[in-house]
Image (cartoon, rainbow, N blue to C red):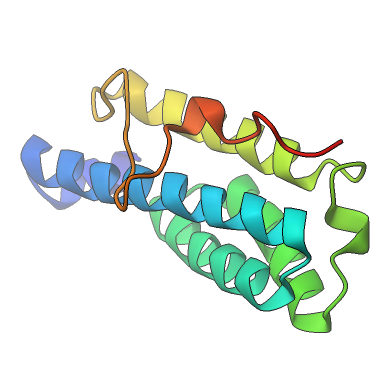
Length: 130
């Protein structure tokens, strides 16, 4: 985060963070749907995109969680990641930790609504089949 702040002014940093948070909320929703329906390609795509974005933002643990889901999607085996595996809960929890850290730097507002009419991050795991 410090390195990103040094790249430009506060507005530039806030824009980077807003783009990251907004797209991640959208991709978490896509991942939730993919895991619920067993869509390995959609899970791979969402996880791959989040992995790269998180790495660029310095969210190493979040990126690593995404890497595991990406690998399962690539292998066509989402079985261990489904509702009982807890992958969505772990990745959502880590995203909230990252988001809180970014908010501590004043870059994230209290409510983030994703593009394409998706829900906020707070409701990503809500309603996930058990």
